[in-house]
Amino acid sequence: MLPVAIRIHDLSIGGCLIQCFHEEPVGRRVKIAVELPYEGWVTLDGEILYARPDYGYAVKWVDVPADIHATLERVINHLLTKSPTDE
Image 1 (cartoon, one colour):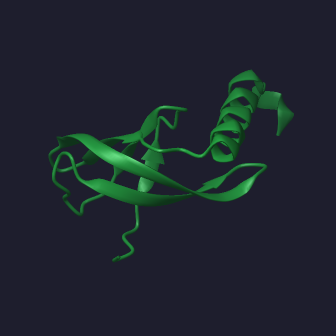
Image 2 (spheres, one colour; image 1 turned 30 degrees about the vertical axis):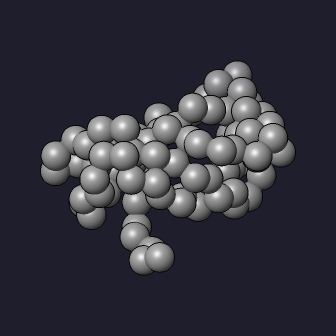
């Protein structure tokens, strides 16, 4: 496994958009370590759905353990309900 720096956009319970200039083929399985606000690091398995040339690729999460799914859901719900003044 070769670590590659990425930037995650549009994180959701189902997947995310990865900004990365290291190209990957559609259909490839990847392991992604994500630092979640309030919860710390989790590692998710994903499958590349499609590529955006010169930008990155979309990933759907696969085989997510129940505890990590619950953590991801909790963080996303918290971020969606947080007001801009909560900082």
